[in-house]
Image (cartoon, rainbow, N blue to C red):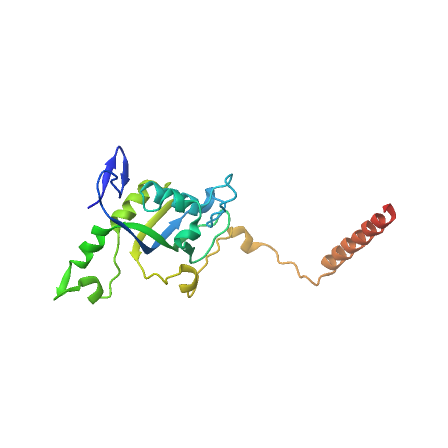
Length: 212
């Protein structure tokens, strides 16, 4: 198993060995509390703000699953997400897919688990290949409000956004809002307010034309 500990850090790549690493498309199931972030999707041009994808990318770089060069442009590794969230929004499950550098031995070990003849067990049972070691390593480098729950091997055509069939959202409102008085949009008070706004807008327009 290509795993090493450096102090309290874990890395899947030991650069002192001649281990072969190959790129494979993977899908990560991620959850997070978004209170401290400006949204899920990374804005590579805005380095002043924090994004969930930025934290995930940095953690994958630290465990050598993504190279420094590829981390500068996520399109190079075919990065996609099943959905996006805005600033302060949380998510229990989001699928993010990308090409990761995986130790060849991990794949060889999966293929060596046979059931009948030379057919790998995961292929016979149609079970995905899971990389728990990678999940554990990445989580060690993530803040406590972001977690990777699983990582599975997918085919090269997999795209998290395109494969997504539905999304579920939950909105949490203060209980006090349920007892608020609903104002009839056709009431005289609302109409009078709109008329006042309209007159003010016209007056400002007239003043602006006069000033020119």
